[in-house]
Length: 165
Image (cartoon, rainbow, N blue to C red):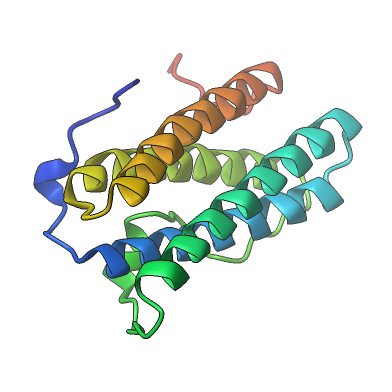
C-alpha cells in the first residue's frame, strides 16, 4: 500500500466508534463535494469522473454506517473540529465558478484524499474488530487510488500549482 507520511504519531488513541464516526463524516462530505462537481463542471469527462468517485464515497459511507450500526448502535457523541480535520480539508461547502475556483477545489480534494487515506491507514491498527480493521485498510487503499485519479486529472487539466518560479 502506498504511504505519503507516517501519521500514526499524529493521531491520538481513539475508540472504534469515534473512528467510525469520523470516517462517516469524511465520506459524507466527500460524496457531497464530488456530487456538486459532477453537476456543475463544464467538461463532461470531468463530471463523469467526479460522479463515479461520488458513488464510491457513498458506498464507503454506507459500509462505515453499517459497521457503526452493528457494533455501536447506541453510541453518539459530538465530533470536534479537530476530529473533522483528520479527514477533510477546507470548507465543507464548495463553489466552482471559474478555473481558479476549480484549481482551488482540486487542491483541496487532493489534500483531503491524501489525508483520509492516511487516517484509515493509521487507525486500522486501533480497530477492535477484524471486519472494521479490514474495512479501514480497504478504504485507505481506495483513498490513495482516488488521490491518484484526481492527480492524473489535475495534471491533464493543468490544475496543479506552478512550481517553476
